[in-house]
Length: 215
Ligand code: GRF
Image (tube, rainbow, N blue to C red; front, side, top):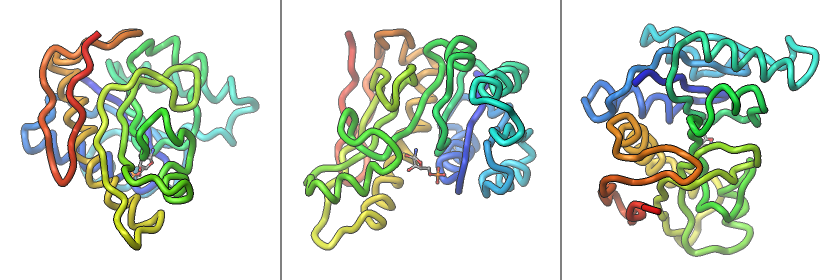
């Protein structure tokens, strides 16, 4: 399965996907990495790995809709069958959702539906939750509201701050996201308004990965 990965920052999740592919654990090909920011370190990583890259900057477009349409056209031209938001810090719009219905996946550093938005780990610390985590979900028109595909729980440790917690959450993102993408590619998850799990997702790491959701 061909995938496009959308990034805004460091790209540790992009790296995790690329490494999982190399290790034979993720049955996809990254055909394009797109960023909204020219300076995103994730782009340099993609270039190093000789993965085609593109920048679709909101600044170069007169409206959010025009930017979203340009993004949909660029990603669509790559022939990607699945779009992965891996630290993409913008909300995709109607053109993207219509071009890739139920085919956009996001990784979020909180146990949704708690703490949607850009500050998942900070809000978990501020609220004093004891169990934080990460979620891989389908993207819909809301902010982090689409159907949940998988989650990993990460305990909040004494002395944690947003930074240390986020770092431990990311360790789990790096196994969960490639595993979910692989399951989608192999037909282990059938995507739709109500995604169906056909197989059991394994448990990993210091905490539990949620059992599959079958509806
Ligand atoms: C991740 O924590 C992800 O959950 C959030 O943005 C962060 C991106 O990190 N959406 P990276 O760029 O993949 O290192």
